[in-house]
Structure formats: structure tokens, C-alpha cells
Amino acid sequence: IMILLLLSGCGTRVIDGQQVDKKDKIIIKFSHVVEENTPKGLAAIRFANLVRERSKGIIEVQAFPNSQLFKDGEEFEALSRGDVQMIAPTTSKVAQLFPQWQIWDLPYLFDDLDSVHQIMDGPLGKTLLDQLHQKNMKGLAMWDNGFKHLTNNDHPITKPGDLKGLTFRIMSQGILEEQFHSFGAATLYLPFNDVYQSLEEGRAQGQENTISNIYTKNFDQVQSYLTLSQHGFMGYAVMVNEDFWNQLPAQARELLEETMAEVTQWERDIAQKLNEEQLRELQKRNQIKIYTLNNEERNIWQEDFALVYAKFAQKCGTDFLNDVKESLE
Ligand code: LMR
Image (cartoon, rainbow, N blue to C red; front, side, top):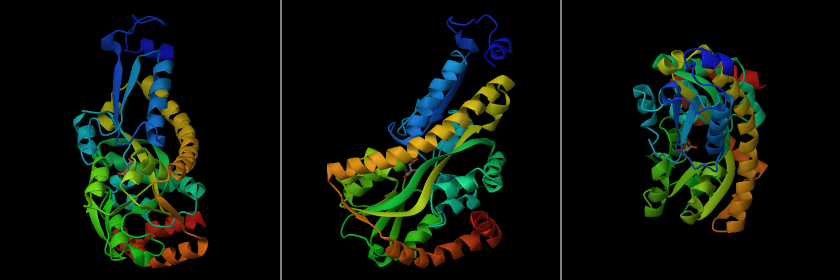
């Protein structure tokens, strides 16, 4: 692939080991909103390193973490304008454009990560990724973070009724709103970058996130309680601007696709490990009181989310939900 790349319009004067001419380079700006020490952050760096090595520096992926370039909410437009070439928003944020993506937000639909991967890697996952074409985006992969948990102030949460009266920050509207509203909680729709401050100022009393995001953003400094509810999945759609993608040499696309597939497998492992490790770190830091829902309690939560499922069916039809449920059986 490397040699073909060199001969295919990326600069014939470049030879192995020599400085790559600037004009021959393919630059891919990869913008995301989380810390580097997270599944997405580390996978972005690994992808950049492997692509640089394998293309001998011809393709340079530049990862910009922490909303340095764009906050979520701005990322889609930045991708469409060509200000960045690659983003990896949560599936929930993709759902703002394509409502069926809210399937990933349905509480307790997926028992474990294997069930999540079964859908991601199967025909239904492909159907979802293919929808991105409608907005001139190409989905390259789906990455994990993990299951979300609840953090909040005021009082500990063990049962759904405990949510009442609290305001929770949500990362997208629709099903996630419904999830909190159905238990009498209010919601505040905010970009990830603004969450810490909103919790500190008390504009929101709680939020839902993976351990990795809770730990790396130090939410335990501004939240008293963590309920390990594992109520919803949070993953990412890694995507590029489709016009940009189509004008790349075929060999470059191949190299990027192959490397992405490899990094995706690696990312899944690291996501699980990081979430486990960082939970231990949170326990060690001992700033937040941690409560784990037992199976019985979890069953109660699950039953009480029936309204949320009804809302999904109303918005996206029952067929898609039934297909997903059948595939999971
Ligand atoms: C959030 O907004 O809570 C998450 O989307 C952040 C992320 O990208 O993991």
C-alpha cells in the first residue's frame, strides 16, 4: 500500500525515510471532546500513530482532544464545512440527526457489551452507519465507551423515584430527556465541555456518564453520589466528511480503513479496562459516595423505563426496535 500511495499522486519524489514534502501530505484533523486518557482519546492517538507509521508520514492524523477545536453541537457543522475531516461523537449526538440512533440510548436494552457489539457489527449497525451518507458523512467505525451511571448531589439515588426534583445534564434531546422526565426529573441540554461548571454552579444537580468520563473530568469534585446503574450504553460513531473521503487516493482509503478496523478492536479492549481501572481510582480518591444497584433494584428500574420505550416506538416505529430485540434474543 505504501509504495502505491507514493506513486499515486501523493508525491513521487518522496522515498522511504526522507522528509515528506508538505504539499504531498494528507492531513486529517480529528476533533473530539473528551480527555486523552479515555477510550476515545487513546484510540484517536493510536490511530494517528499507526497511520503515520504505515503511510510513512504521508497521511497525518492530527487529534484534537477536549473540545479544543469544537464543542459537541459544533462538530457536525465543522465536519461539513471541512474545518475538520474526522469526528467521533456519541451515538446519542448522532441521534439528533438520525432519530433511529436513539436505539443505543434505550435504558437496559443491552445486557452487556457483547450484545452491543452483536448489533454494532451486524446488519442493523450497518444500516445505521449507512444513514450518515444522507448528510455527506461516511461512518468508518463504531467505538465503545461503556455503560453510563448516574452522579448527583443532594441525596443518594437507589430507586427511580429518587430522581424526582433533580435536574440532570443530558448530552442530547429526545430519549435521554424522556428517560429523566418519566421519573419527574428535569433536564439541561449542554455540551460536554460545560458539564463540570454546570454541576459546580448547581444549574444541574446530576448527570449520566461512563466512569471514564466521570473520572477524567473530575466530576467527583462537584458531585456527592455515584449510583452504578449501568442503565444505558454510550459509544461513538467515527466518521469523516464524505467529499473529503471520496477524493482520497484509493490506497489511502484502504490504509485508513484497515487501520481503523484494527484500532476499533483495540479500542474495545482498552475501553473496558479503562472503565474498570478508573472506577478503582475513583474509589481510591474517595470523594464520591458509590452505590451499586443490585439485580433486584436494577429490575425495578428496567420495568419503570417502559414509557421511554413507548416514546421510541412512537418516534421511530416499532419495526426497528423489534428487529434489534429479535437479533438480541
Ligand atoms: C458527553 O457529552 O457526556 C459525552 O458525549 C462525552 C463523550 O464524547 O464521551
